[in-house]
Length: 368
Image 1: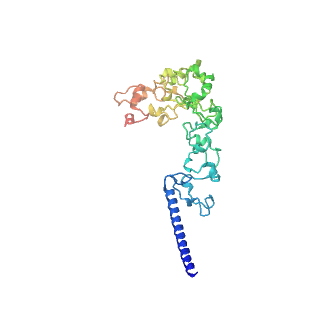
Image 2: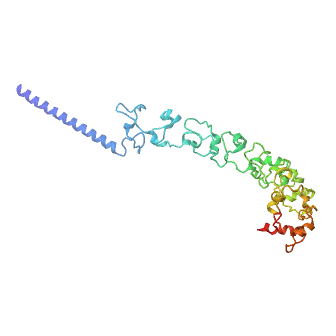
Image 3: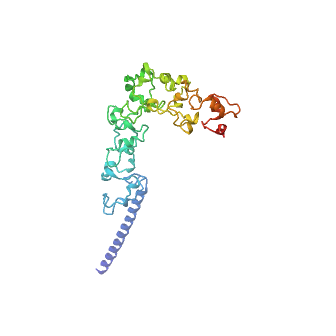
């Protein structure tokens, strides 16, 4: 009995040892198979794609595969900053699958382009991450090829951008006539078409005026002071707006010829009005400098000794003058006083030769 029991015991021990050996071998075989399967081409793959290089621990924990937004450490801002409205989105609103690389960071991949590509594909040029609404349209337009200046800054978008949708902004021409052709053709005072005016409105008009009638740019002939007229026909008669001379005399010939004090025609005055006159209305004051250009009558011994031009210019011809008709002394007295002066002669031109500044005594000393 003891022997049988011993044999049986020995047999049982051998079996136990064999089972342990088989178990260890099975475990090793299983691990080998799992490892081989994992590293083989047909083995298990990341649900995020073959080239997904982010560590599992950045999003998952040992508690399970369920994503916990409170504990994940993945730095999403390094790839795409989640700011504004994007910060409150659920992951699957952008990532419809677990292959995250399928989502790019271009706006149009997630958002429908309501402008139908008329404003380009870069949404953040105009829109922010917090809202689609825009409050600074005019400011944004300043960076375009047509800044909204002057009256254009107050225009409604649809006045220029007319389309089937208020959100579609087809490219427009930037020249004035493209938008203002009707204004040009309908203007009759003066008629732009008959006069053959340039279709470049900026030639005459300024964008900083709220009306076509204000801020008229007549820069080629400034309408200021005496020329500040409101009636175009005063100069442009018979609706003729080209070929007019800017010479003073061409407009003021009648003024020149009818002036008697002094008589411009008889005196042979230059027809260039600007030599003596300014643009002040009424032709006065004139800038004629008698003292510097001819003879001192506003200074020296002749200052206050005359009342009108004809006191010296006795014939009314300002190119002729008389010295011998206005002085109290007579010829005999002057002859005696100048008896020792060579080439003395009783005439006005000789007086001026010796007394160019109107001095009394000294004669030729005036020339020193």
